Image: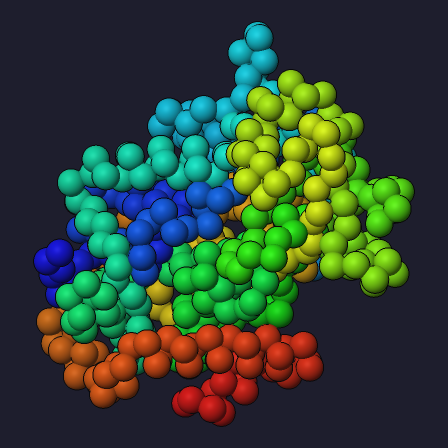
Amino acid sequence: MFLKDRYDVVIVGAGVAGLNCALNLPRDKDVLMICKRSPKNSDSYLAQGGICRLRDNGDYDSYFEDTMRAGHYENNPAAVECMIRGSQQVIDDLISLGVRLKRKADGSFEYTREGGHSAPRICYFEDCTGKEITTNLMKAVKKLSNVTIAPYVEMLDIIEYENRCYGVVAYDIREKALKIIAAESTVLATGGIGGAFSHTTNFGILTGDSLAICLRHGIAVDHINYIQTHPTTLYSKRRGRRFLITESIRGEGARLLDKNFNRFTDELQPRDVVKSAVLSQMQKDGTDFVWLDMRTIPEKEISSHFPAIVKRCAEEGYDVFKECIPIVPAIHYFMGGVRSDLNGRTTLNGLYAVGETCCNGVHGKNRLASNSLLESLLFAKRAAKDIGASSAHITGSELEKAVSSLNKSAYRDPNKLLRQYIKDVNLAVRLADEGVDVNEKFKELYR
């Protein structure tokens, strides 16, 4: 694919955050979206449970409290309010794009409930809500003449000069060629960091490159050790990504059982609490997993609401209608990230971060179930509107100086550089766990 050396906006990542950002940019902006592999290698496609929606004004206080409580009250209240107040518009936007969400006979939404929620407020489509949303967003973006989607293009670095971002340094995997791509605005929408670890629900390519790059450039990163472990993934001896068993199953009545098939916890507590209970029970029982019993749910409901899970479990040899399935916690979601405000702005001019890549404080220390798709969509749209309202312009001389400042020899071995980024992420997480100021430490290492 031919890539120009300059665009108005470069978006790194093609999940729901990147796609919704592209959809909401002015049509006169020349936009490039790059992603490491196929756009379908995005965790947005994997989201099963659903997307939260404020049911009515009477639901606001409890929804706000549920989000804050799940986040251990380390959330940014302004971000939480922004997300909740904007949730109805987000759902309206999705419906206008053709996204299907479960409805009752009278046409109203069929809400489900997940752990940490005091009431049902989650819209969903079967057990593949993320795929339904992402597929429709992609269809809409592909219709835009001002947006180019370039798969198999990896970001190796950003172009930074005098406290401004001027685009990205990228590597075209198919052409085996280095690309210097300038842009007036750059958006990081690269997802989480699960791929940097051995047991995860994430795609292996999601290794936190954006975080390592930002740390090296002195761009603020917050709470890099705030990593959520999903309490229920299908236990398997197969290698590779763990298959997630959505929290909605527990919301509909599934039970967690120990090795003797006795219930040992309240399944509707926040994820970190349930995860701790599962790990504790595994240690107590001396097992590699605990059991999840879906037989408490009517078979018709299981078949209609969770068909993908029924199919995957069958592939592993389990009949969910007749027996329990083994589950184990796995690294799932990243609450930390590149520091951003409510419009996606980072601490470097011209650089934005949205979705799981960013940390605007909405999740606090622990994400409330089904807030992720909502948060990604809403704040990506706000970033797009902010970019559209900006009068920023890069002159030719500014760009020439920025590009000339690059040390291109650093990009001779892209794979080696990306492996180093994984080491950087692991180091940063370890340092944060030890109470070290990660931003200051990386300034010492790389500046």
